[in-house]
Amino acid sequence: MQTTVIPVILSGGSGTRLWPLSRAMYPKQFIRFFNGSSSLFRNTLRRVYGANFGSPIVVCNNDHRFLVRDELAAAAIKPEAIVLEPVARNTAAAVAVAALAAVRKASDAVIAVMPSDHDVKDADAFAASLQRAAEVAATGKLVLFGIVPTSPHTGYGYIRRGTELDGASGAHVVDAFFEKPDRATAESYLADGNFFWNSGIFVLHAATFLRELELLAPDILAAARAALDGATEDLEFLRLDETAFARSPSISVDYAVMEKTRKAAMIPIDVGWNDVGSWSSLWEATPQDAQKNAVHGDAILVDTKNCLVHSERSLVATIGLDGLIIVDTPDALLVADQNRAQEVSAVVARLAKLNRKEHAQHVRSHRPWGFFESLSVGPRFQVKLLHVKPGGQLSMQMHHHRSEHWVVVCGTAKVTVGETAKLVQENESVYITATQWHRLENPGKVPLELIEVQIGSYLGEDDIIRTDDVYRRAASETR
Image 1 (cartoon, rainbow, N blue to C red):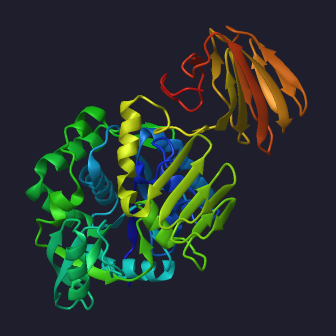
Image 2 (cartoon, rainbow, N blue to C red; image 1 turned 135 degrees about the vertical axis):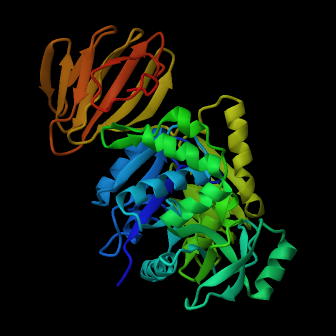
Image 3 (cartoon, one colour; image 1 turned 180 degrees about the vertical axis):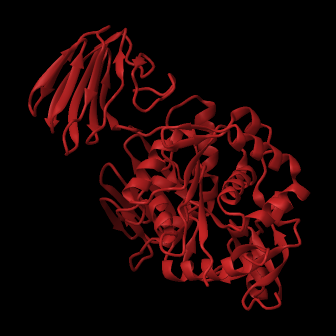
């Protein structure tokens, strides 16, 4: 009989090494790479959906909760829970909370813990590997996947395979863990044949994991248990108690448990895995032309090879280049050497230190009701595109320093100004003066799009007073 596996999807990262496409408020797991129609997050959900899998537990931060909800809805998957981490505490605390939630549902639960931002080419082989790992985990083992290496990669940690487990064909004792190596060391690992990339994907007997956590890192378990006990429901989300969760040390599940336990086991897999952790790894995973160029968007390449070109804005033309990364977005351009792709996070850190917005937010800002996109900014004016999903509605709000002129270009808007509500059709407009209370809704079944012209002495998104917000957002979450 096959073991039912409860997927645990970790969605807490910000993907800084894939800047400027990945931003803190819209990280890489929500981006549609490889010219596809689905995000990495949605693809992850679909890989662990079916008769042998339970409803997923998703762990994410507060800023991404509506993005997660939308991805689940788009995949037509109802989660067991969407757990909100109040503060970042690495993976050990997140896995502890998920394991506690799983054993409260079923004492013999087996969980498959995985990041939301990996790419897997052979989904069927991956699902079969999860079932094999679940069988091993059900015996009380903590299983992790080792990826069969295809190159002497220096951006991954490695696992050395030990002896085969008795009665578990294909599963091995974990002999040792190794940090990211230099090139020469990685080449020796590849030649050895017993070293595998650490995938960061675990299949765990939840109760066994919790017992090991209590033995090896009891402070993490205590904080996770208290945070879950004190959790509150907010719409379809489960908010962990912040004070309790913050007491957990910030440490990975590898360091907290897997590198210390005697119950660790490893199953090698070869499923076309890529962690999409940098522009160079994205280049490796993207279809390439005869000159090994990977191109997304409008580009003309002359005498160019081994390059990744990604344009979301304009034509990119190259001449005589080799091994470069060129990423052009509406508000930022990255040009980097492929061999230094791991250093992009240093640019992000510098942007944050300079208090610039480009590290955190795109020109397009996503909201639970849809998104808005800045089109033009000048002295005392700003022009935006607002896209409101069917059934979406902005909060009832008021601005002190700006007036707004809305022109509907697609769909039908329901606009409330003060006590008066009216429908505004395509090519019609409405004007809202400063200090007037107002709300925008989409009562239709198709997306609503309108052009918003803001005029005033201050146009920042923090010039807002909100009441009656159906999404229950905090005052710091604008719109």
